[in-house]
Length: 297
Image (tube, rainbow, N blue to C red; front, side):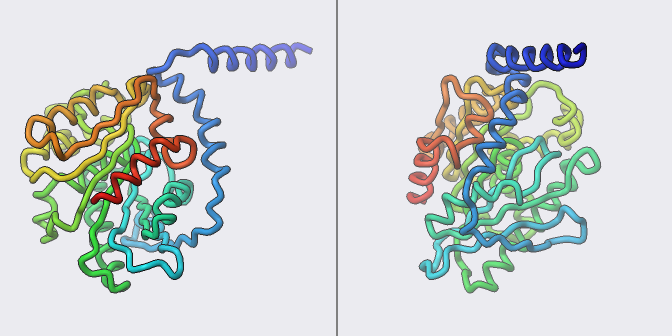
């Protein structure tokens, strides 16, 4: 009887926390994660035929390639989409549903896996980004898609990585890669100005100490002055409890001072981190926005 009462009390407490924990808090996001994962895994992805392609020797160095529908016309674009997880959690196999909207547009999709914190940091992950890009280029050549543009996208920490690949032109020059291979970037709930982020173990494990060279290189905003303005779509909830809204706002303001016509900034007035993360499966208005933006590139 005592055990039953304890379990009942714990369930009641969890229910009350779920209902009354305010938005813009990490606890609110964590309590809603099970619902989010349930929605995500209800998406029918049976029509997709993902293929695992390694780009390095480490177990995490691979990506899932989702080919376009059979019989589709020559795709003009390829989408590389980085999943979230605080630079630590998640596998691309769990996020194949995010490839579905692009698959339905007749586009091939790449979902990368990279080495993770805390065993690896920004410098290792940057090397993985470079190798992913090189392997994607090899994939394009093997398919006869030379000259095909790449659209980068990502959610949360994945949006940070997509932005680093998009804006760090110094790194691209070292690879002898033309930044013109990218036609656009879309990010959802992403840490885009790390100086506006609160101090967390996750951020420190990836970017290191504030005011360090590592932190600067890991911060997308620090690369904006060295690149030519390019199209970007940014979606962020004002009640995000994982990634501060101020991070996206600062990123927007930096670009707006130079080339306001290149950025489309969608704010979700009462939106949480998971609201931004739900664009592919339970937020049809956001999916329409992303696909509409994509078609114009």
